[in-house]
Length: 123
Length: 221
Image: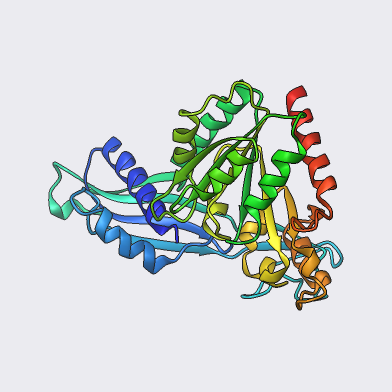
């Protein structure tokens, strides 16, 4: 279970970028997580509510965009997305494959409020 | 005013930065760093003891042991003849680059050629945290079962060598080596693999030769 340090890292990144942009509040955080990255969404959200308390990112909503893994079968010479539970080639069932992507694990963007503008200027 | 700020930053970038500093420190002393990972009881400390003794007179070793509690492993490494340091993570299930940096700051590695970092016994979390070591080695052990590559793909993908320990138990337990190795092949094609028994000593010569070769290559790099 490494969701706590992961959550702390997300908070540090979000606050650093928010302050650089002059934010008074962080409302949303967009994360991109590949299928092969092990992270439990609910657990991160649970820790988030604790670690973000007292910061400008308190109460921010976390959005998890999950990207499917991409694989390549050398025998069939074609790409595929593995189905849940098996990385084998869905066509030949073989193991002569390689993983092309699926490790994504990044903060993509944050949504912030900045001071000085009227509420109705949101957009 | 509400606005969207593009970030595009790796979540563990802070850890990765410290890992780079650790790497630079090791390189500055021409020390090869090896991150040894496995589930609890796979034989990490036993393999380390054999490695220390097997390389005696050929390389000076330092060992950093990560455990939730106790200094049992570091004591064993020290008894076998290595410079040993114990990190107690206090509950954390893996080592991270900051913990390793703290340990390195308390050690004199100037006469060391090989640093083995014995990670916390766990097949999940250690795979996500770079330490700054040069090579990652996984120990699988026969009694764990032949399905582990399928169940812990992240761990099997990220390593540079695999040691299959306790092969002396193969006649006594259900372990399909072909099925196991097929799972490894999917995740890490062509992975350097050693079949050993720390109990009988079988296969350890090949492992020691690989480690020595890696040390020598690193010294020349």
